Amino acid sequence: MQKKPITNKLLWVFAVGQFGWSLLSGIISTWLVHLYTGSAERFLDTNGILSGFISQNPLIASLTLFGIITAVGRLFDAVTDPLIASWSDRANYKGGRRIPFMKAAAIPFALITVAVFVLPQTASVTTNNTIIFVLLMLFYLFMTIYCTPYNALIAELGDTQEHRINVSTFISFTYIAGFSLATLIPSLASMFQGGRIDAILAQAAASRGVGLEELTGQLAGKMDEVRAILDQGTLNEILLVQQNAMRSAIGVMCIVACVACLIPALFIKERAYIDSKPVQTPAFASLVKTFANSQFRRFVYADVIYFFAVTLFQTGLADFETRLMGIPSDNTFTLTVIMTVVSLALYLPVNKLAPRLGKKKLIIVGFFTYAAVFLITALCGQGFVWGLIVAVSAGIPMAILGILPQACVADVSELSTLETGEDRSGMFFAARTFAMKLGQALSMVIYTSVTVKHIVNGEAIVEAGQYRTVAVIATVTCVIGACLFLLYNEKMILGRIDELKAGKKA
Image (cartoon, rainbow, N blue to C red):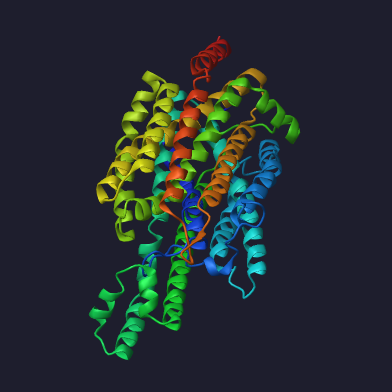
């Protein structure tokens, strides 16, 4: 029996945790490939500034280091996700079944995120490859330890259909806030750089007998022109300043994320609101039961597709904007702000429309809208207006698919609890977390394979056509995801929940 009434204030405190882990996840998904692969097209671009530390060429067939890491990581998750979910479902700690895991995971989760960008900088590429492999496995592990119990609370705090939609809306808001903050890292890094790069350039200008303004104007071209102007020692000195500034900015963001992750863990007294009983079913038997649920399987098929496509978009967004649309990197944050504002403006309409129209219809609209966004990206020309079209259009599915899928999992989980008497929320959300990671992993393999650098006129580059191919793949998969979600029977699920609840009251 629930002991205290669940309020929107409590749900907002809970949602702060989503801000924390989405910021950490956003740092990895947005900046890992961007910093460790590729190459800067223009002076002071951040693309590829850490690429000298790890292997860049395919290691096995067409698989790059990150392709291999993410593939192995998913096998790792296939074991750890159900184990952590079952451990949480079966837990009987004084602090509850979920909160103790969140408390334990928050700090190492944040520390490992920083370490991914700081530790792989030895003189040996092989050693660095190994370090980053181990760190990313630990990142996925602590992400699971925090997120699986956290997500289970969505169903447990969402005791009514209204609360399920509200908590999904709130955590969607904080998810976007966290992800958006992650995109600010270059701006924060520029503050850490201070005037150090200007000082280096001033020294270079003096040695050439020109003014700083004149030298800066000469550096406005592409990198091959810049290399003809600045000697390699000066370029290396500037690169080191950029690297350390980015690492410092990531460290600050991770501190913010860690505090956010700890807020619900420290301020929500789980036992005061939820009267949960430990589940007796062993881990993999529970997993089998979860996937035996036909409606959940239909949801997960579409969900894997969603995360695959949206991760392709997120991973390539900076490259789409700078390489395909010719937008200066300084203006990409403006587009992110526009996309976020549009999405947030639609949260209330989505929240109000979901009970009336049904979550299923809106989610299908979200899939098709994302497909349109990716198709526009694949066909785009040069100019800021293309980035504006993509940013405004992407805000629509971001709002829909950021809010409603969690509520669908909570619906399926509640129906299962009512029918079986076992609350296996942790396992349902672990299965969804695994779907998320599987989709993200597949997208990382595809992205890094499609955008692998090749030699053109003696220079290793990624061509615009490779980025367009990524956008086309995302378009096709989103259409497939919409078709798969047509099989999900929301009407039956909600009707059955109402029927069983009415029977209990009677």
